[in-house]
Length: 360
Image (cartoon, rainbow, N blue to C red; front, side, top):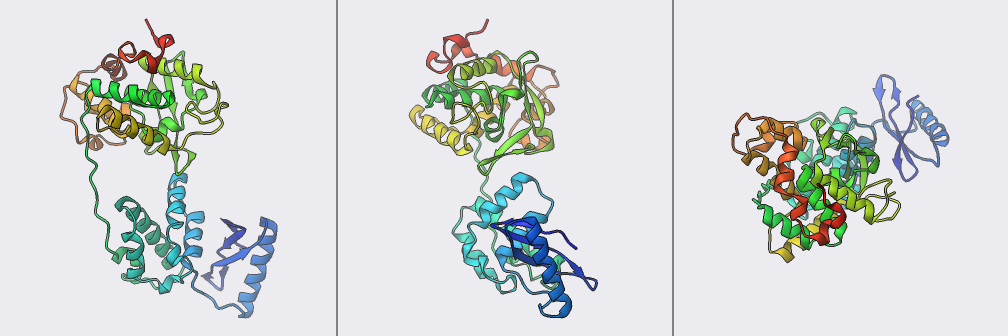
Protein backbone atom coordinates (compact mmCIF):
# COMPACT_ATOMS: atom_id res chain seq x y z
CA UNK A 1 0.00 0.00 0.00
CA UNK A 2 1.19 3.53 -0.79
CA UNK A 3 2.26 5.22 2.45
CA UNK A 4 0.32 8.44 3.20
CA UNK A 5 2.20 11.75 3.06
CA UNK A 6 1.25 14.72 5.30
CA UNK A 7 -0.43 17.68 3.64
CA UNK A 8 -0.85 19.73 6.81
CA UNK A 9 -3.94 20.37 8.89
CA UNK A 10 -4.44 16.65 9.71
CA UNK A 11 -4.72 15.90 6.00
CA UNK A 12 -2.86 13.01 4.37
CA UNK A 13 -2.48 11.98 0.75
CA UNK A 14 -1.58 8.65 -0.82
CA UNK A 15 -1.11 7.44 -4.39
CA UNK A 16 -2.22 3.79 -4.42
CA UNK A 17 -1.94 1.76 -7.62
CA UNK A 18 -4.97 -0.35 -8.43
CA UNK A 19 -5.46 -2.48 -11.56
CA UNK A 20 -2.43 -0.88 -13.18
CA UNK A 21 -3.62 2.67 -12.58
CA UNK A 22 -2.46 5.16 -9.98
CA UNK A 23 -5.11 6.94 -7.91
CA UNK A 24 -5.07 9.84 -5.49
CA UNK A 25 -6.60 9.48 -2.02
CA UNK A 26 -6.91 12.22 0.62
CA UNK A 27 -7.94 11.45 4.22
CA UNK A 28 -8.12 13.35 7.50
CA UNK A 29 -6.38 11.72 10.46
CA UNK A 30 -4.53 12.82 13.63
CA UNK A 31 -1.50 10.61 12.88
CA UNK A 32 0.17 8.30 10.40
CA UNK A 33 -1.32 5.10 11.90
CA UNK A 34 -4.91 6.30 11.55
CA UNK A 35 -4.12 7.71 8.10
CA UNK A 36 -2.94 4.28 6.95
CA UNK A 37 -6.17 2.69 8.18
CA UNK A 38 -8.31 5.25 6.36
CA UNK A 39 -6.30 4.97 3.15
CA UNK A 40 -6.63 1.16 3.27
CA UNK A 41 -10.39 1.57 3.65
CA UNK A 42 -10.53 3.93 0.67
CA UNK A 43 -8.54 1.48 -1.45
CA UNK A 44 -11.00 -1.26 -0.54
CA UNK A 45 -13.88 0.99 -1.57
CA UNK A 46 -12.11 1.64 -4.87
CA UNK A 47 -11.85 -2.10 -5.44
CA UNK A 48 -15.58 -2.51 -4.79
CA UNK A 49 -16.42 0.37 -7.13
CA UNK A 50 -17.87 2.57 -4.40
CA UNK A 51 -15.48 5.44 -5.22
CA UNK A 52 -15.28 6.96 -8.66
CA UNK A 53 -11.75 6.34 -10.01
CA UNK A 54 -9.84 9.41 -11.16
CA UNK A 55 -12.01 11.91 -9.29
CA UNK A 56 -10.73 15.45 -9.84
CA UNK A 57 -9.12 17.07 -6.77
CA UNK A 58 -9.58 20.70 -5.85
CA UNK A 59 -6.72 23.04 -6.62
CA UNK A 60 -5.80 23.23 -2.93
CA UNK A 61 -5.66 19.42 -2.66
CA UNK A 62 -3.64 19.05 -5.85
CA UNK A 63 -1.21 21.85 -4.97
CA UNK A 64 -0.62 20.56 -1.43
CA UNK A 65 -0.04 17.07 -2.80
CA UNK A 66 2.48 18.29 -5.39
CA UNK A 67 4.41 20.42 -2.86
CA UNK A 68 4.49 17.55 -0.34
CA UNK A 69 5.62 14.84 -2.78
CA UNK A 70 7.64 16.56 -5.52
CA UNK A 71 11.41 16.80 -5.40
CA UNK A 72 12.18 20.45 -4.68
CA UNK A 73 14.42 22.49 -2.43
CA UNK A 74 12.98 23.29 1.03
CA UNK A 75 13.12 27.00 0.25
CA UNK A 76 11.13 26.42 -2.96
CA UNK A 77 8.47 24.54 -1.01
CA UNK A 78 8.23 27.43 1.46
CA UNK A 79 7.78 29.92 -1.39
CA UNK A 80 5.13 27.75 -3.06
CA UNK A 81 3.14 27.50 0.17
CA UNK A 82 3.32 31.28 0.58
CA UNK A 83 1.89 31.73 -2.92
CA UNK A 84 -0.74 29.02 -2.33
CA UNK A 85 -2.16 31.11 0.53
CA UNK A 86 -2.85 33.87 -2.02
CA UNK A 87 -4.87 31.60 -4.32
CA UNK A 88 -8.01 31.48 -2.17
CA UNK A 89 -10.32 32.28 -5.09
CA UNK A 90 -9.50 28.96 -6.81
CA UNK A 91 -8.57 26.87 -3.76
CA UNK A 92 -11.90 25.01 -3.58
CA UNK A 93 -12.38 24.75 -7.36
CA UNK A 94 -11.82 21.42 -9.11
CA UNK A 95 -8.70 21.56 -11.27
CA UNK A 96 -10.68 20.81 -14.44
CA UNK A 97 -12.96 23.82 -13.79
CA UNK A 98 -10.24 26.48 -13.44
CA UNK A 99 -9.99 28.82 -16.43
CA UNK A 100 -7.31 31.12 -17.76
CA UNK A 101 -9.43 34.08 -16.64
CA UNK A 102 -9.47 32.71 -13.06
CA UNK A 103 -5.68 32.53 -13.04
CA UNK A 104 -5.17 35.97 -14.59
CA UNK A 105 -7.49 37.54 -12.02
CA UNK A 106 -5.17 36.27 -9.27
CA UNK A 107 -1.99 37.29 -11.09
CA UNK A 108 -3.21 40.80 -11.93
CA UNK A 109 -3.66 41.58 -8.22
CA UNK A 110 -0.01 40.71 -7.45
CA UNK A 111 3.36 42.28 -8.00
CA UNK A 112 5.13 40.96 -11.12
CA UNK A 113 7.54 38.94 -8.99
CA UNK A 114 4.80 37.23 -6.95
CA UNK A 115 2.75 36.75 -10.10
CA UNK A 116 5.53 34.76 -11.76
CA UNK A 117 5.99 32.67 -8.60
CA UNK A 118 2.25 31.93 -8.50
CA UNK A 119 2.23 30.89 -12.16
CA UNK A 120 5.07 28.50 -11.38
CA UNK A 121 2.99 26.99 -8.55
CA UNK A 122 -0.12 26.61 -10.71
CA UNK A 123 1.82 25.20 -13.65
CA UNK A 124 3.59 22.62 -11.48
CA UNK A 125 0.27 21.59 -9.90
CA UNK A 126 -1.40 21.08 -13.29
CA UNK A 127 1.57 19.11 -14.63
CA UNK A 128 1.28 16.80 -11.64
CA UNK A 129 -2.45 16.32 -12.30
CA UNK A 130 -1.69 15.49 -15.94
CA UNK A 131 0.98 13.00 -14.88
CA UNK A 132 -1.49 11.23 -12.59
CA UNK A 133 -4.14 11.04 -15.27
CA UNK A 134 -6.52 13.44 -13.52
CA UNK A 135 -6.36 15.80 -16.50
CA UNK A 136 -5.89 14.91 -20.18
CA UNK A 137 -2.38 15.28 -21.56
CA UNK A 138 -3.29 18.11 -23.91
CA UNK A 139 -1.33 21.24 -24.71
CA UNK A 140 -4.08 23.67 -23.65
CA UNK A 141 -5.02 21.98 -20.35
CA UNK A 142 -2.33 23.71 -18.27
CA UNK A 143 -4.00 27.10 -17.81
CA UNK A 144 -0.84 28.61 -16.26
CA UNK A 145 0.96 28.22 -19.59
CA UNK A 146 -1.84 30.06 -21.39
CA UNK A 147 -2.25 32.87 -18.86
CA UNK A 148 -0.82 36.33 -19.49
CA UNK A 149 2.64 36.41 -17.93
CA UNK A 150 3.62 39.41 -15.73
CA UNK A 151 6.37 41.60 -17.14
CA UNK A 152 9.91 40.98 -16.02
CA UNK A 153 11.12 44.03 -14.11
CA UNK A 154 14.87 44.31 -14.45
CA UNK A 155 16.52 45.30 -11.19
CA UNK A 156 18.15 48.70 -11.47
CA UNK A 157 21.74 48.42 -10.30
CA UNK A 158 22.85 51.26 -8.02
CA UNK A 159 26.44 52.48 -8.13
CA UNK A 160 27.51 53.37 -4.59
CA UNK A 161 30.67 55.10 -3.44
CA UNK A 162 32.50 54.16 -0.21
CA UNK A 163 31.38 57.47 1.35
CA UNK A 164 27.72 56.74 0.53
CA UNK A 165 28.00 53.27 2.04
CA UNK A 166 29.49 54.74 5.22
CA UNK A 167 26.71 57.31 5.47
CA UNK A 168 23.99 54.65 5.18
CA UNK A 169 25.65 52.44 7.80
CA UNK A 170 26.05 55.38 10.18
CA UNK A 171 22.34 56.23 9.84
CA UNK A 172 21.08 52.65 10.31
CA UNK A 173 19.09 51.84 13.45
CA UNK A 174 19.27 49.75 15.52
CA UNK A 175 23.03 49.40 15.69
CA UNK A 176 22.83 45.68 14.85
CA UNK A 177 21.24 46.59 11.50
CA UNK A 178 24.11 48.93 10.67
CA UNK A 179 26.59 46.20 11.58
CA UNK A 180 24.71 43.74 9.37
CA UNK A 181 24.89 46.12 6.40
CA UNK A 182 28.59 46.70 7.05
CA UNK A 183 29.17 42.93 7.17
CA UNK A 184 27.46 42.51 3.79
CA UNK A 185 29.64 45.25 2.29
CA UNK A 186 32.78 43.51 3.62
CA UNK A 187 31.89 39.92 2.76
CA UNK A 188 29.49 40.11 -0.18
CA UNK A 189 26.98 37.85 1.59
CA UNK A 190 23.42 37.70 0.37
CA UNK A 191 20.85 39.12 2.78
CA UNK A 192 19.37 35.62 3.23
CA UNK A 193 22.83 34.19 4.01
CA UNK A 194 23.61 36.82 6.62
CA UNK A 195 20.26 36.34 8.39
CA UNK A 196 20.92 32.57 8.64
CA UNK A 197 24.54 32.87 9.87
CA UNK A 198 25.24 31.28 13.26
CA UNK A 199 28.12 31.76 15.69
CA UNK A 200 29.28 28.14 15.36
CA UNK A 201 29.91 28.77 11.65
CA UNK A 202 32.53 31.42 12.46
CA UNK A 203 36.12 30.15 12.61
CA UNK A 204 38.13 32.95 14.21
CA UNK A 205 41.39 31.04 13.94
CA UNK A 206 41.01 30.49 10.20
CA UNK A 207 39.22 33.85 9.82
CA UNK A 208 36.37 32.37 7.78
CA UNK A 209 32.59 32.03 7.91
CA UNK A 210 30.94 28.84 6.62
CA UNK A 211 27.98 29.76 4.42
CA UNK A 212 25.77 26.66 4.43
CA UNK A 213 22.15 27.86 4.75
CA UNK A 214 19.85 30.77 4.07
CA UNK A 215 16.63 32.32 5.30
CA UNK A 216 13.58 31.97 3.06
CA UNK A 217 9.92 32.67 3.64
CA UNK A 218 10.45 33.44 7.30
CA UNK A 219 12.32 30.21 8.09
CA UNK A 220 15.96 29.11 7.90
CA UNK A 221 16.65 26.23 5.51
CA UNK A 222 19.75 24.18 4.81
CA UNK A 223 21.47 24.92 1.53
CA UNK A 224 22.22 28.17 -0.29
CA UNK A 225 20.72 29.78 -3.36
CA UNK A 226 23.20 28.04 -5.67
CA UNK A 227 25.60 25.13 -5.29
CA UNK A 228 28.46 27.62 -5.46
CA UNK A 229 26.82 29.56 -2.62
CA UNK A 230 28.00 26.95 -0.08
CA UNK A 231 31.44 28.33 0.65
CA UNK A 232 33.88 29.58 3.28
CA UNK A 233 33.82 33.37 3.21
CA UNK A 234 37.09 35.03 4.24
CA UNK A 235 36.89 37.44 7.19
CA UNK A 236 39.35 40.31 7.15
CA UNK A 237 39.77 42.80 10.03
CA UNK A 238 36.74 44.91 9.07
CA UNK A 239 34.39 41.90 9.14
CA UNK A 240 35.99 40.58 12.34
CA UNK A 241 35.43 43.98 13.96
CA UNK A 242 31.71 43.69 13.18
CA UNK A 243 31.57 40.26 14.84
CA UNK A 244 33.45 41.56 17.88
CA UNK A 245 30.90 44.35 18.28
CA UNK A 246 27.99 41.89 17.84
CA UNK A 247 29.43 39.76 20.67
CA UNK A 248 29.38 42.84 22.88
CA UNK A 249 25.76 43.57 21.96
CA UNK A 250 24.22 40.15 22.59
CA UNK A 251 24.53 36.38 22.74
CA UNK A 252 27.52 34.36 21.55
CA UNK A 253 25.36 31.36 20.65
CA UNK A 254 22.77 30.64 17.97
CA UNK A 255 22.09 33.18 15.24
CA UNK A 256 24.46 36.15 15.13
CA UNK A 257 21.64 38.53 14.19
CA UNK A 258 18.67 37.64 16.38
CA UNK A 259 15.73 39.52 17.92
CA UNK A 260 16.10 37.55 21.19
CA UNK A 261 19.07 37.57 23.64
CA UNK A 262 19.77 33.83 23.42
CA UNK A 263 20.11 33.89 19.63
CA UNK A 264 17.56 31.09 19.19
CA UNK A 265 15.54 32.89 16.51
CA UNK A 266 16.73 34.55 13.31
CA UNK A 267 15.40 37.87 12.11
CA UNK A 268 13.07 37.87 9.13
CA UNK A 269 14.89 39.12 6.04
CA UNK A 270 12.46 42.06 5.77
CA UNK A 271 13.90 43.47 9.01
CA UNK A 272 17.20 44.27 7.34
CA UNK A 273 15.63 45.56 4.13
CA UNK A 274 13.40 47.96 6.08
CA UNK A 275 16.31 49.17 8.23
CA UNK A 276 18.43 49.74 5.12
CA UNK A 277 15.73 51.72 3.32
CA UNK A 278 15.10 53.90 6.37
CA UNK A 279 18.84 54.59 6.75
CA UNK A 280 19.21 55.31 3.05
CA UNK A 281 16.35 57.81 3.26
CA UNK A 282 18.07 59.63 6.12
CA UNK A 283 21.40 59.59 4.28
CA UNK A 284 19.84 60.71 0.99
CA UNK A 285 21.22 57.66 -0.80
CA UNK A 286 19.51 55.05 -3.00
CA UNK A 287 20.60 51.82 -1.28
CA UNK A 288 19.42 48.28 -0.50
CA UNK A 289 21.16 45.22 0.99
CA UNK A 290 21.59 43.87 -2.53
CA UNK A 291 23.20 47.10 -3.74
CA UNK A 292 25.76 46.78 -0.91
CA UNK A 293 26.62 43.31 -2.23
CA UNK A 294 26.84 44.82 -5.73
CA UNK A 295 29.05 47.58 -4.31
CA UNK A 296 31.55 45.01 -3.08
CA UNK A 297 31.68 43.30 -6.48
CA UNK A 298 32.19 46.62 -8.26
CA UNK A 299 35.00 47.69 -5.92
CA UNK A 300 36.79 44.37 -6.54
CA UNK A 301 36.43 44.73 -10.31
CA UNK A 302 37.78 48.27 -10.26
CA UNK A 303 40.89 47.02 -8.45
CA UNK A 304 41.67 44.31 -10.97
CA UNK A 305 40.18 41.19 -9.37
CA UNK A 306 39.33 38.63 -12.10
CA UNK A 307 35.61 38.12 -12.69
CA UNK A 308 35.77 34.35 -11.87
CA UNK A 309 37.36 35.23 -8.50
CA UNK A 310 34.59 37.74 -7.79
CA UNK A 311 31.94 35.17 -8.72
CA UNK A 312 33.48 32.68 -6.29
CA UNK A 313 33.72 35.31 -3.56
CA UNK A 314 30.01 36.15 -3.91
CA UNK A 315 28.86 32.53 -4.27
CA UNK A 316 27.63 32.86 -7.86
CA UNK A 317 27.21 29.65 -9.85
CA UNK A 318 28.16 31.43 -13.09
CA UNK A 319 30.20 34.47 -14.05
CA UNK A 320 27.32 35.38 -16.38
CA UNK A 321 25.48 36.66 -13.29
CA UNK A 322 28.06 39.43 -13.03
CA UNK A 323 27.07 40.98 -16.33
CA UNK A 324 27.18 44.47 -14.83
CA UNK A 325 30.98 44.19 -14.40
CA UNK A 326 33.51 45.12 -17.06
CA UNK A 327 36.24 42.66 -18.13
CA UNK A 328 39.17 42.88 -15.73
CA UNK A 329 42.82 41.95 -15.70
CA UNK A 330 43.94 38.47 -14.65
CA UNK A 331 45.74 39.74 -11.58
CA UNK A 332 45.32 37.46 -8.57
CA UNK A 333 44.50 39.50 -5.45
CA UNK A 334 42.85 38.62 -2.14
CA UNK A 335 39.32 39.85 -2.81
CA UNK A 336 38.24 40.30 0.79
CA UNK A 337 41.49 42.11 1.60
CA UNK A 338 40.74 44.67 -1.10
CA UNK A 339 37.30 45.33 0.38
CA UNK A 340 38.88 45.73 3.79
CA UNK A 341 41.02 48.53 2.37
CA UNK A 342 38.01 50.15 0.70
CA UNK A 343 35.84 49.98 3.82
CA UNK A 344 38.30 50.26 6.68
CA UNK A 345 36.68 49.85 10.10
CA UNK A 346 38.81 52.73 11.36
CA UNK A 347 37.12 55.11 8.93
CA UNK A 348 33.59 54.33 10.10
CA UNK A 349 31.69 56.33 12.72
CA UNK A 350 32.55 55.20 16.25
CA UNK A 351 28.82 55.02 17.08
CA UNK A 352 28.47 52.17 14.61
CA UNK A 353 31.63 50.15 15.07
CA UNK A 354 32.56 51.06 18.63
CA UNK A 355 36.03 51.69 20.05
CA UNK A 356 36.56 47.99 20.85
CA UNK A 357 36.39 47.21 17.11
CA UNK A 358 39.62 49.05 16.39
CA UNK A 359 42.14 46.56 15.01
CA UNK A 360 45.82 46.94 14.43
